[in-house]
Amino acid sequence: MLQLAGPLQAWGSAARFARRTTENAPTKSGVIGLLAAAQGRDRTEDLSDLTALDFGVRIDQPGTRVRDYQTAHHLDTDRSMPVSERFYLADAVFVAAVAGDDALIDRLHDAVRAPVYLPYLGRRSCPPARPIDLGVRAAAGLEDALLAEEWHAAAWYQRKRRTEPTASLTTLVDAAPGDARADSRRDMPLSFDPLHRRYALRGVRIHTVEVANPWARRPAAPDHDPTSLLGGD
Image (tube, rainbow, N blue to C red; front, side, top):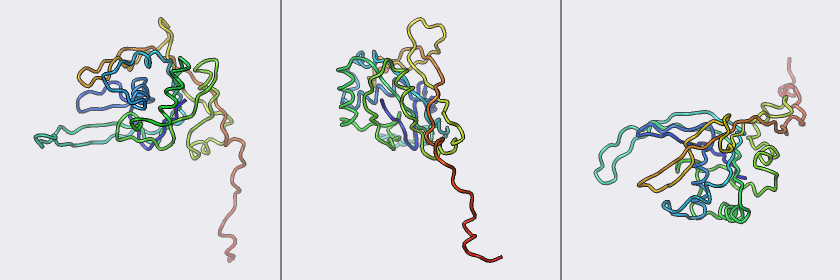
């Protein structure tokens, strides 16, 4: 289980040229890349063991989409590069999970706790604001693990919904082959080789789960006038 929270995140699956977009939730390619980097894998190494893992993500705090314009100069010629339009998710929180072979999961867990390359949330300019490691869970399936995990949204975000005993959260989980109801995303990494990056389609099932809101059990702040102690008319 992984906690992906930071001031900015960017999970692109269809970035082209000077326009770099972001999906509404972490992509499988982005999370697999994070895990491969934590293990210290070279970009040209085989990814088949990682792509075979079941993958799912839960949107605990959707954040706000923001747009930025960036400029750069070519390292060798010092010529100005085209203006780049980049999109990010601000103040978002996600819970991502991978499931598979126990030995591989244990190795990935060790790597996340002591990464060879520091993790980032989709782009190098997006460092995490919280520890990524949420530990290994024993569950019947990946969807059960996402349902059982506590709500990791920021306290201020949960507090705004104190009148709701549960939070309705969206999950996106790998679909079984041939599932006609599944959506499709081109974010299954086949190669991270800079000379020939390749991605395939994968099926995604989208559900809504109810997770307990810890702030629903807390009393509201007392309604009082702090200036009443000053006296006067």
